[in-house]
Length: 182
Image (cartoon, rainbow, N blue to C red):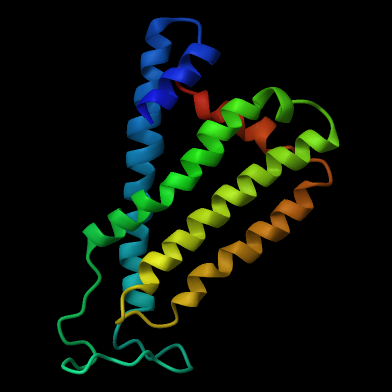
């Protein structure tokens, strides 16, 4: 994120100070603050809604281990949630910070092909983020019905399809990445 912030700063800001502010914005706000926010939300929501002893969801539960009973010493930890959020940020970084930077001359144009590629970058990045979060929480044997964490992918696909009728996500959201640097 540090090098990406410097690259975006050199390309899209006017002064050295703005480049430093953009780099700090990328590292501390886009990466760390967003990861802390997602980890906090996951800690409270995933642990409470999909954790052990939650009887609200029907269907089969996972088999417990040979030597432990349900709810015995199993608890979602904030550090684990933060680790999942940080690991899931990697594809977002690749697709929205690196690939978007490289492809910006193509995706910032006013034509349908640019809109398709730009919107697809966001679909892929958010889809990967969701799948990696699912895989992280699915690895915990005491969480049940973790497949529900994949449901945002359906929403992303619908929004992506709807955006192809005239809303270039990359053109409108891309400049927001550098907001606050100037």
